[in-house]
Length: 283
Image (tube, rainbow, N blue to C red; front, side, top):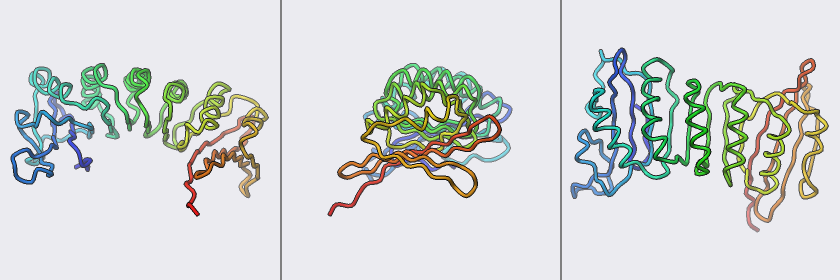
């Protein structure tokens, strides 16, 4: 079973060859014994309504031939629409976390459509960890990015080249974004996206970016000349034939580094971006 955070959270999953779901709800114990303990609730009426559900995790499809365990509750389609989803939307934290990295499948896609329709329009997620399951994920992310409340975005697996538009929108609309991509996702790095990355970097509003890979859609000279006088630049060649470009901003207590690896293959230039923030020890 997925490890849940130490706060009220819920795990949902589809059932194999079925339209039913299962859920496991972790909530604070309000029975007067061990008030700080988190317990699994199998009856939604026992939920302590003063608390809010802070996170949703979606797991892969469950085979009905196996015992799910006492902490899991099965919900049919009727109760999904009339009881469970209304309960979830009513008691979900205003800016919750969403984690989905399950194996794709028909049952999971059906679950995601219902879940995104139910919570996507009434809650603005602060953190999203999401694998690609088709255009439904792109539409959901577009709606969430537009709220400007999404701060942490982690995209698992291989996303399509068109994801560059989503990334550009996320970096533009979020004041201090944190972005992590899977190394298998490659995007087009055009002038607009590069300008956004460097603008956020120089304002020290983008201090964490990991595994941004793609094809350079501008001349390499354009990338090399980016960065103002406040940024220290360095360029070296690596033994494997790649070129490493580094930009650094030195503050009183931090050093923010932007590192780009470039590799030329034929007429294409493939690049990899990483941004990190190092906190200096006080003397």
